Image (cartoon, rainbow, N blue to C red; front, top):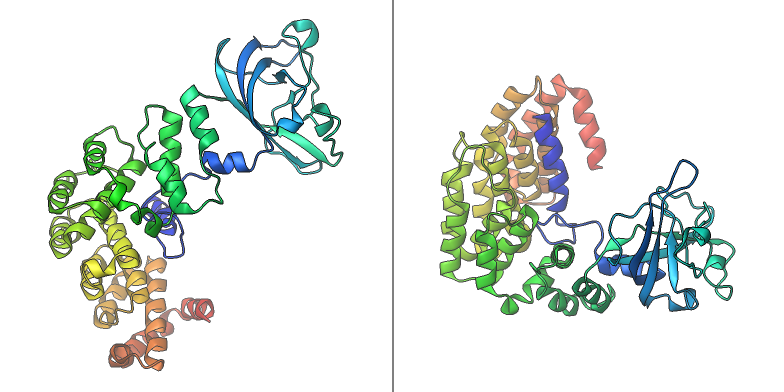
Length: 426
């Protein structure tokens, strides 16, 4: 159960309303457009020489500079570049090489070393410095004594990928315009391009993605979703995209792809398919997920949690598809699942569902001895209800007496925990 909590906590961060990334999408830390924007030099180079090094000399590789996308003023006189590190590849391979100026006294976690001064591709002239090249090593005119030029590891790149990276809109460009560019590169034959195009969507807000729904190719989306080789993170995005743009037949397709629980054989990424299904089919889709998973105690936890994520997504982004009261009721059965009851209680407090008070007394009895996380969630729910009652919420006012009675009972048995939660809510 501890392992499940760790995984769920990391995933839950991505599905909170505060997250700006696409819901149900595990976004990359950086896309290529962000890396290019953060670099001072970006070039295309051809591998000319590889030296594996020896006991007395570090390995190195010499590249012929073919094109400079950014930072031409720093490498105006350079024709080759020597990377003082081992490079995997063969002569003639093309690489994207980038570097950035950093403060000289900034600690570097990892460095590769290079000099952009013209170097002949032979051993007599390939000895390079064992420190990061300063701006003086590139050109005298751009010298900045307080800066150090740190080179990243060369990235193998095809002609298609180089064109994609160099023509991609900068991060400052309007999001909708940027996504229009990346849309045509989803599932591109070049792996670097396909992964980066997906990453641009995964890092975008739901509303921005939805604004392009009329441009989506639903036939392609269905093909990618049906492909068992589609990676989980992309599957989730494509499920949401089809939910934005699909029809009644697409809802049937998504339900078929989700299918009935298959024991432990969960297809990771299906939370996006479920989210898309709920948008397209509303009550019908929710009933299917309830009957097949939420109300079925035999279904594995991870598969049930995928439904929880889909319901959370709908609450945050498409609540009108079903209605908030109906969404609240959908996760009530989770109070009976030890590994998910904490999440359910926290969500229902945030969703201002004050109908749980009578049920929470029994939950507390079953968790107070060995499940402090759920006990803390119960206390948080009761305190939030009390605040809502004071603010005039009629539903909260109706349950206030019972809530206070349960809270005082918990306080008598675990005063420390109640005080802790009270401090957190101040």
